[in-house]
Image 1 (cartoon, rainbow, N blue to C red):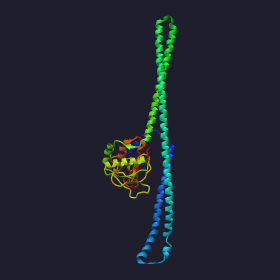
Image 2: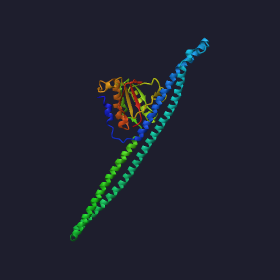
Image 3: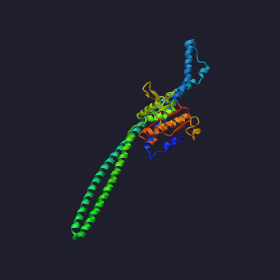
Image 4: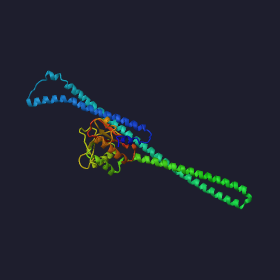
Length: 368
C-alpha cells in the first residue's frame, strides 16, 4: 500500500460543471477570514508593545507603596522609548479590533450569500425534477394513445383479410386495403415504441434530478460505524486536533466523527492557546465543551505534521512514520463510509513540516 492512496481517492472525481458563483463566494469568505487572523495577530502585537510601559508603572507604584520613595523621573526614564511604544501598541490594538470586527462581518455576509446560493440551486433542481415528472406523464399518455391506434389498425387488417377470402372477385381492391392497413399498423407500432423510449428517458431524467435534490438536502453522516472503528483501533493512542466552522451540518458531523475516534482509542488534544473565534462544542457526554479552532476546507481534510515531507514521498506504507500511517488509514476508512457519497468528501492528504497542537489535524469542512 503506497502513500499515493489519497491521490487515487481524489482521481475518481467525475467531470462536473464548475459553479463559479460558489467558488467566488468561498474565495471571498477565505479572504476576509485571513483579515480576521491578521487582525488577531495585530492585537497580540499591540498588547506585547504595552508590556514594558506597564512594567514601569508597576515599578513606580511599588516604590511609592512599599519604600515610600517619592521622586521625579530621572533623565533615563524621560528619554525611554517605553511610552511611545506603548502608545503605538494601543493604536495597533484599536486598529486590530476594528479590522477584525469588520472582517468577521464580511465573512458572515459571504456565508449568508453562499447559503442563499445553495438554496437557489436546490429550488432550481426541484423545478427541473417537477418538469421531468410532468414530461413523463405526457409521454405515458402519448404511449397509451399510440397503443390504442395500433390495436385498431390490427383489427382493420384482420377484417380486410376475411373479406378478401370470401370475395375473390374483388381481390385486387381488398389487397390494396390490406396493404394500407398493415402500413398504418406499422406506423402506429413505431409511434408506440418512440413514445415508450421518451417515457423511459423522462423517468431517467426525473430520477437523476431527484437524486441530486436528495444529495443537496441530505446532511453528511457516517455509516458502517463498526467498520470505521475496527480500522482505526490499530492506531489506538494517536493524538489529533479538530477544526471546523459554525455551520450546523459541520458541527454535527464533527460530533459524530469525534465519538468514533474516541471509541477507536484516539486521543483528542486541546489547543494550548484558544483563538478568540474558537467554537465551544460539547463532544462528550461528560466534561465541559471542547474548544475547536475554526478552519476552512471543502470536505474532510487531514493534515500530518512531519519534519521533512519531501523525505516521506515514495515510501511504502510499511516504512512510513506512525502518524502518516494513521492519517492514511483514517482517509481509507472514512472515504467509502460517508453518506451521501461524493468523491470530494475527503480532501487529498497534506504534509505540513510545522508542528501543530497534535501530530494530526483533522478539519471538518463544508459539504462539497
